[in-house]
Length: 313
Ligand SMILES: Nc1ncnc2c1ncn2[C@@H]1O[C@H](COP(=O)(O)OP(=O)(O)O)[C@@H](O)[C@H]1O
Ligand SMILES: [Mg+2]
Image: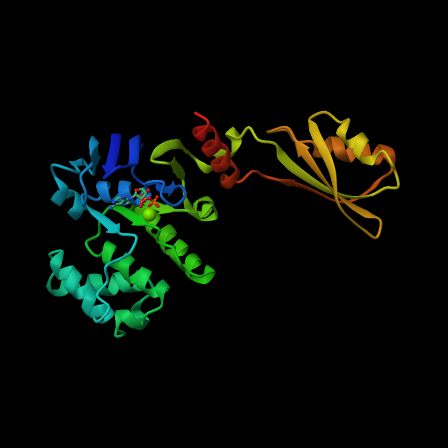
C-alpha cells in the first residue's frame, strides 16, 4: 500500500527526512510517531504527492508519488496538519464544493455528503460557518473532506492535535470505525493515542527511522528496567535490604509512609516479573501487603530509550 525507499528531504540548509525506508500493508492503522520537528509532516506531504523528495522514492497505492502525483492524490485521503478550510463557507456548502472538485455529482454526491457527515458526526453543524466552529468540529470537517471520494488509504497529519479529551475520543471512535475498510497512516506526538488505536508504530527522530513494529513488540524490546510498586506494613528495619536481596531487583526505594503503610518502588531487570517472589518473602517474614502493582513500560519509555541511543550514534 505504501512503499518507501531511502526517502530524503532537504530543505534549504536543513535535512528534514533522512533516508527513510518502510513498507505499510493494507488494513492497518499505523501510527507515525515522533517529537515536533522529527519530519512527520514532511514525509506525509511527500507521500500525498504534494511535495517531491530530494532523494529516494515512494509508491502509494502502486503510484509513484513523484511521477504520478495526480493519481496518488486521487487515491488517498490526505488531511494536512493545518487544514486549509474556507472559514466563510458553511460546512455542507464547503463539503459539496470539495466533492464537486473530486468529481462527484448528482445523487451520488448528496448521498456521500450525508454519509461522511454522519460518519464524522458533523451533521448537526452542517449549516454553520466553518469559521464559527470549535477546533474539534473543524478537524472533523477536514476528515470528512478527506473521506469524500472513498479513498482506501488515509494519511492524517495530527488529526487529534489541539483537541480536548472528549474530542480526541470521538476521533478515535471514527478511526476505529474506518479501520475495517481503510488503511490509515496517522501522525501524532501523543503516545497514548498510538497505544489506543494503532496496529503498528513507525517511530522517527530527526528524520531517521528508529523503529517499525507493533506497540507490544516495541515495549517488549525495551532494555530499561521496569517498576513494581508495593504497599506493605512491616516494622522490619531491613525491609528494603531484604527486598533488594531477591533476584532481579536492582533497587528498592521507600517512596512514602502513611499510618504504618510503606509505599516502596522496586526497580526490576527488564522483562522480569518479581511479584511472586515478593509475595513469598512477605509471607515468610509476616509482612502485611495491601497492594502489589507492576507498571508496564509504555511507548514513551521506548521512544526515550531509542532516541537516546540514536543521539549517541
Ligand atoms: N517548508 C520548510 N522549509 C524549511 N524547513 C522546514 C519546512 N518545513 C519543515 N521544516 C523543517 O523540517 C524539519 C521537519 O519538520 P516537520 O516535517 O514539520 O516535522 P514534524 O511534522 O515531525 O513536526 C523541522 O526541523 C522543520 O523546522
Ligand atoms: Mg508536523
